Length: 459
Ligand SMILES: *Cc1c(COP(=O)(O)O)cnc(C)c1O
Image (tube, rainbow, N blue to C red):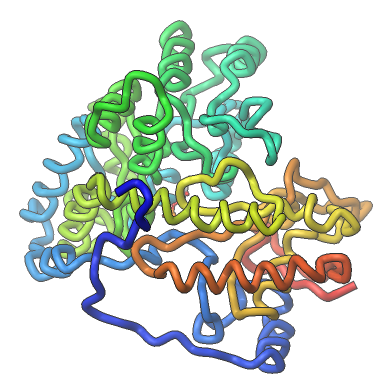
């Protein structure tokens, strides 16, 4: 069987048309959207690789769960089913449902952080950083040296630099570090996994300083699969067993179920600390809802519970990781520089290496995103200076990001191999004329999270 294709482990029961456009139409749409893919109409996009967040397809079983949802205001059956599922996979005692990951982040960080605090993470996701900074605390990224090098091949490039963590704690003082966060997989760092050994090492540092460890669990199943495939001692374990061990080292987690929850909306915050969860419940009630539904409908809770079970199926994870690698390996073969090795949910093109003639202040990643749309109606997203840089209000000087990446995020269970082949063909054509791609100038921005609304013009 080793020589055979890894096929989609599902058949299609419901289809949704996608629309073709002409190059002339796309040029107009791109100008109207000020060269920002977030401002495009989704109807004008052929293959949408903007994000893997909330864009997945639900299974027949999840749609059946939708009908079983209990819409009781308090104490609904769907909440208790979700609680059971989360307790059995994640092992945490208390679970607060939220409408998505950032709501869990806001509640967690405003319950734990104060001005002057420091929160280390392997790499903070943009909403995580923004929610920490909103409390007056400082968000610090501590990726390892190999995690900063797009071309370096390493099995666990998502790891946290444990020595750097010790240094940050020593400099700030343990009482100024209210928690440490590990993001699995490391989304902003190229979708790369974190090893169990690294999680254990970070836990040991946290223990020594009595600091709680939280997992940003968005892609916990994909990370568990990588541990099983790549880390010694895990080959015989099920993804569920790996996940159980992973969370056993943590005091709690935040989750965007729009990723490995296989739903279009949903999330949760979980922990074992009774006093903390009481404070968090007060905030939850203020902005999300009663603690047994937290901003979601009963049917959403039910679909999330089913999704969390399905995402750990071996056939699914095998196909998921292999299909992302298929895109990455194909692009590597035609010479497109990507973050190596391919991650779990996305392929990250190294735009700085592909367009060396475009300086970071002219946003090579954003320029490449625009070309992909123009060439083939493909929507990708810049993960570079547009997302993580900033402009000095006085001098207009741009602080640039460490890497200029373009992310091709793969929605779960949505596109087939022929869609992905098309993406490779379009990229091949763009790659062939890369020398003629010019940069973009940012003409309007609104921080924080400026990438959602910034406007650009070609130079
Ligand atoms: C998506 C994401 C979040 C935020 O979740 P939302 O559901 O979009 O609010 C947080 N952390 C990581 C790593 C993510 O990928």
